[in-house]
Length: 318
Image (tube, helix red, strand yellow):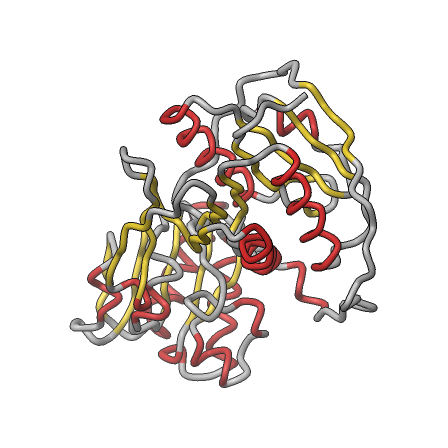
């Protein structure tokens, strides 16, 4: 039986794998547990095959609930019921599209404080998050009951402790009438791109000049075994599908290597990639804001520099 006043982490899955940011939420829960001494439990909705993974990453208990494909009303009912059943003090989720939707719904049901895109935890147990497109940070205390979404790339993926003997409990939550039902999810064929989990991202912006030039971004990403990203102007010009967008209105990423090609560094874009491990920026404007966050800055015409980089990498690989 799960203890009262526990910390609960919703583990979102893609197939049978737990998504990276959910593991980061689990890491945040472990840090919170180290402060208040409350046990950490993970919840899996639908496919329970990741229970062993949850245990190996530090969950002291795993709760599973049988359910079909994601439906916001149904998943909200489940998480709300579990939080009430065990008097959960804090529910953590990854800042994914579904995670943010669920967090707001569950917080409203519970009358709990809701903190979105948490980046760190203070020694006093308050959450730090970015505001105004990343220009400022604020510290938020969510009260006795909190629902928190964790920003990708901030808490880090926890270390696996090896096989753990966490208890796995099957829970049941009564079905209620759904007010809205997802009948079909229509995706672009390129929707399989996974920017959030990528270790290398090569991103292009308006400075690439044309869709033809943007192919160099794709070529470099392929050579490095990475994923293609883009700033909003490149998306709006139709050079790459919208699901490649990095930034405040796109995806928040934190790869080990981020190469920004012809991206000026608007605040909205930087807020989505500033957590990257190593940033290389290429821009002909030496005063471009992107250089303020870059570890290495290359001043020059990106359409002349990228071919040189591509040929050098090819030579080294051969």
